[in-house]
Image (cartoon, rainbow, N blue to C red):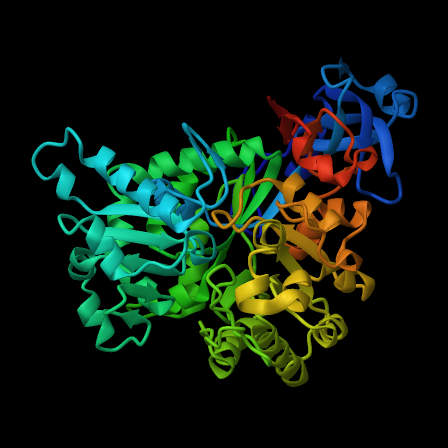
Amino acid sequence: MDSTTTMAGVTRGPDVAGKPWRLAMMCEAAAMPLTVFTARMIRTMDPSLPTANAIAVRDGRIVEVGTIESLQPWLRHHEHVIDDRFADSVLLPGFIDPHVHPAMMSLLLAAHWITPEPWDLPGRDIPATEGRDAYLARLSELIAADGSGAEGDAASEPFVTYGYHAQFHGEISRSDLDAITTDRPLIVWQRSFHELWVNTPALAWLDAEEGAAWDPHVDLAAGRLFESGMVWGLRTLGPYLLGDGKLDRGLDDCATLVRAGGVTTIADAGYGIFDFDMELASFREHFGSDESPFRLYLMPNVLSAKGKLKGGGDLFDQLDAFRSYETERMQFLHAAKFLADGAFIAQLMQMGPPGYIDGHEGAWLSDPEQLYLLIKPFWDANFDINIHANGDQGVTACLDTIDRLLRETPRFDHRTTLHHFGVSTQAQVRRLAALGVAVQANGYYLHLFGDAFVDRWLGTERASQMTRLGSVAREGASVAVHSDLPMGPVAPLLAASAIATRATRNGTTMAPTEALSVEDALRAITIEAAWQLRLDHEVGSLAAGKLADLVVLADDPFTTDPIDWPAIEIEATVVGGRVYP
């Protein structure tokens, strides 16, 4: 029999028993035994069959969900194994974190962390540090420890720390950092990633004076580089923090964090921040094999693509060429990431009237007209549009852009998604729903910053209503949540708890009418996240034919107070039917 060539140009072997190769593969899979996982409870997140206690899996996919009794038609006709290891546990679809930055997290893992909240990182626990004196003392302590016993030039190498936030640590400036050391470059990375505070030697190391000649976001006197100024600093910082095997170690640690969070699917919402080929090659090496305990989906950072994918050729052709990196566990979405206004955590987001209490102004990453011009070719090419938007003025820029594009080139089921969604208005919520726009919020914003942003920046009304997801759900728009790692931990149950309770880490309940129901909060980390990535036919719920990706929990979140969700033990994950304890 002759070989068969598919439309993708892949040559398959000869037909088996006169059947086309696809049917032969199906027959081969059908000959494999079934594995049936039993559980105390299975929450499918599928309204047609919301609960079960048995799930049959074969060749990486779900065969049927139900009970041992309802599965009998399959079990009578096929070899099978009953796996009772989860008999006392609760199964849900594997959690989805639809917005993470593995390369960015890897870079920051090479720095010293001083954060206002505790972090549990691989190989180190980071305690919370609050107060200006405590921050500067901790910084001095880490620098002294880093230089002690060093030989040669080790003690004069740049010292980089991450996690500073003025609201928790007080104001600092170049003079404060010079008082700590002028023997080595000292770089303090703000908790948002969008801002650097540096000493005098670091200004020279980063070529900041050259950057200040054209970039208003480089303040030499203060030792501050923010937004585009921070990107200028990345030219030097990136290679330093990602080289010498640091990227590889960081990606391994990222994998540990993802797995510990019960996450089986992640999306890098903006790969290419540092170097497209370097990132993709490293991702494939670390996450691309069928040994990976999660699936990775990718969308490009268009601002980075515009600046780095040069040398001739069409932008879409260059992006499409990256598909050569694809594997079964690492794939590209037909989607792109854009950025409107500045960082929420650094309070660089663009705010409409009445603005900030202290009168400062935010920053645009792409001003409204530039945002439209960047998005339009991707819109016309039917890409799913994902936009970083934090302040209400940033949200307006996004909605104006989508409104304009819909009038010029109508699209159905476009699944445009606003990411982060820090501060918004009721009018914007109704408008985004009317435009068919989804919201993907950072559940950690409210948890960590809900109290902190009241007195100095936003006031009680707007600070308490940040991430107003209850209104979005009531208007019928899709709601998902993400970590934006490293902005928040890969902890979907923590994010879901925050949006279900509206409780800050200090125990304050803020705008309780904006809380999501238990059902909607858990949908936000499963099926709604899948829908926004256009992957809901594969993951996000448990049903026949979908990928066999599950998370194994010690307790049932549907019967546990949402305030206690972060304490639920994650016992294992299952990806493609394979168990990862």
